[in-house]
Image (cartoon, rainbow, N blue to C red; front, top):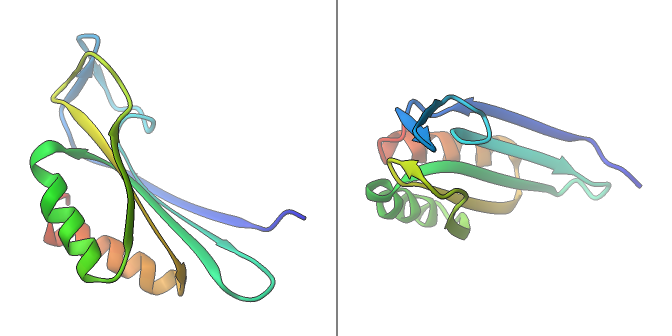
Length: 112
């Protein structure tokens, strides 16, 4: 059975190139959150962002301080400049708290 999923996304303001071409693609520069509710009222909350190497530790530390699980840090592309990495995080719980914590964490770590 399918359940509704809400996705919100904004682009990071990073002057990035892939294969020497400037990109503003939402596939390259996302800060995205998704919320998927099921019948028992527990919401699966997921986050993903493009992140620069020097932003990884502050953002990861701030997410963990808020009890949010970081599940992956990896690259998506070759031939990008600056080096674009991607971080994923998640929890099951209140979607409003997850959104607030994700945004305040991003601000604290200097992503916005």
